[in-house]
Length: 149
Image (cartoon, rainbow, N blue to C red; front, side, top):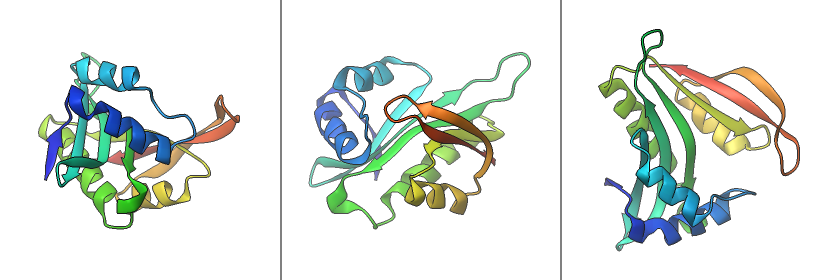
């Protein structure tokens, strides 16, 4: 079951981030996402503890743009990987976008993150642009991926 994260979950989400990304978000950055009205920070628990989460924005349409879903991160604690949790969270985020009339979903992913790229491709994303040297920590490229909803 997917539920909305709370302040009490942030330390556990930060730990999952630290296991998953070279430059994890801080607890303060995660808290800012909770306070952002367009952001969603949702998780899956096992025995009460967060084991996977998704952070994404539902971007409401403006006068010249359609609504979209922007995936910021999806991460699973290493002890719970390869169980389909990330796919479940991604599917949920895309459904949330469809519910507000979003026509596209976008994201950036490190070129070296082969498992994430495969997940996104299985869900209809394709690479539309490369941001050369996007990640400041090691100047790695980011693939900009887009899916039509």
